[in-house]
Image (tube, rainbow, N blue to C red; front, side, top):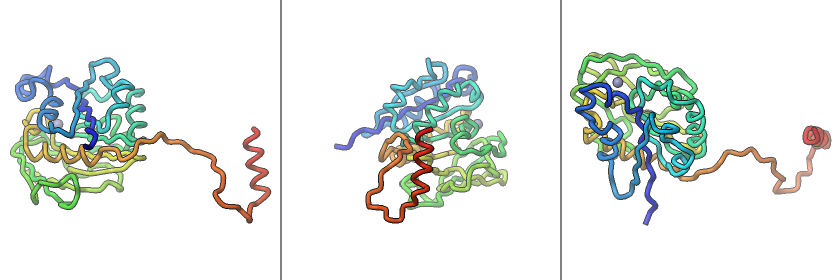
Length: 257
Ligand code: ZN
């Protein structure tokens, strides 16, 4: 039997404690709603949040996490840089990362992208149509040509992400904008998926299509290998007949410094 995928769902967990509407939608936190919504025999899910010691992301937790899901909004700056560096390193070593909605401005997403990750937004509660533009991708399995969310916060282009992102969903909004709402990246050995639906004042993490996408993405992002990055000096496998003695001498000088 396959090993379970160890998933950690990280939530800033602020709005649920400070906004009555969000509290009524997600009384135990939206991370718990996601956990309940994607629960399956092949997943082992734990929760973590900002106010726990080390943000709930201790070395032991990160070591045991195959895929980390990240939701943050108004307290990105409160995540210590040291935690961000550790998560970044884990992604490069193979840990999968799903960044949701307002996580586009999280320190970890911006550091992995290297761009501003800015976008246009509007909170009018309008309709969103999420188009599946890569039906052969593992993340879109079980999703039709499109699905709709009746009330959302609009996220529109231009989304300032790197051009190596592979787009699997494009959203259209009632107000006229479009957005690359589902994009995959690879950094080091790690797979990253950004998925934009998820504004906290709407029950988006109770939508069957959204949960299906997240479940698919967890399985897609699971590490195939986990390996520390090293930069080894190596011996040649074959005899090198054209070796430049000067190069060898220079290397020797550098090594002796
Ligand atoms: Zn939002």
